[in-house]
Image (cartoon, rainbow, N blue to C red; front, side):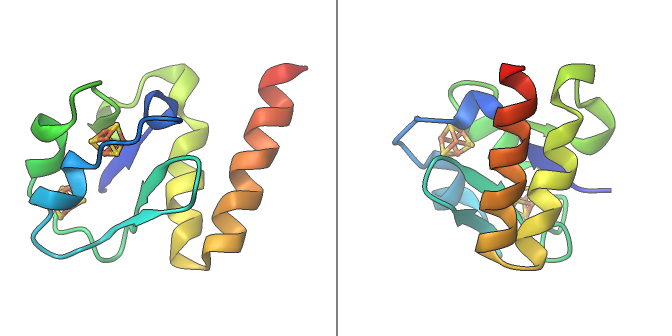
Length: 95
Ligand code: SF4
Ligand code: SF4
């Protein structure tokens, strides 16, 4: 279990979460930021730092945000995989 960033982050330019993360496991993929699930130490610092409540623990992800568990996990493979997963979510959300 780890922390997850959801779509509330999309388009937000400030990066308060990055500034407080003690292990530098939050990655910018362009549209938004994502948490590497294997590097995150579950400290919770980013959750309280985010001004738009875009970060929750995986166990607290709301149903509509469930795809973001996999989108965040994809950053463990590569930024390209993560961007592709984000694109698939956008296509599904628009249909
Ligand atoms: S929970 Fe802690 S370690 Fe994990 S992404 Fe947030 S600040 Fe970084
Ligand atoms: S603080 Fe929140 S909105 Fe800002 S970059 Fe981090 S997750 Fe996104």
